[in-house]
Length: 80
Image 1 (tube, rainbow, N blue to C red):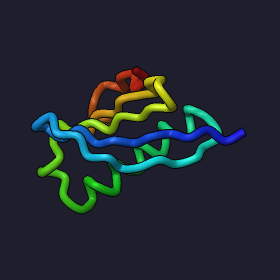
Image 2: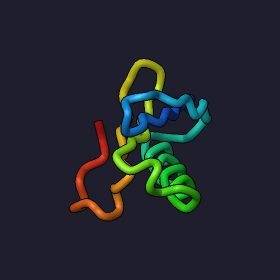
Image 3: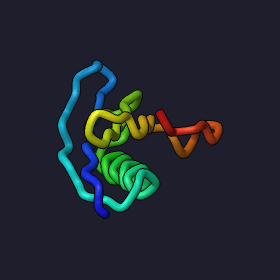
């Protein structure tokens, strides 16, 4: 069964940008996609998004919050 996940970008000024919904198999797949979103954005304009976070929810449940420095941080847990 596919679940509907919502992706949002919180920038470093605490402004929320809706990235949309996507049907995915599970939380791990949604978290991996969130990391992909960050990689794509950083490839285009990394400095502008320093301090930003991708937030992932499934209905009213928080799935994860991934900071833009997730690859360079100390392998912090990205789950909410």
